[in-house]
Image: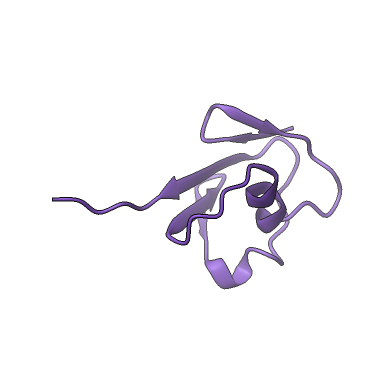
Length: 66
């Protein structure tokens, strides 16, 4: 099981990628920063970066304001 943002669970499977996790949760906002077990994963690497079972994923939506 993968835990996302401390509140969502995604079922782990072999080959699960960062992109798969985001798709499962319908996280489509363009400005997202992703960390897997504390390590930043750059957007170009999302489709190739596998997420290990039991990982803690943070998907932070960047929003500016004034």
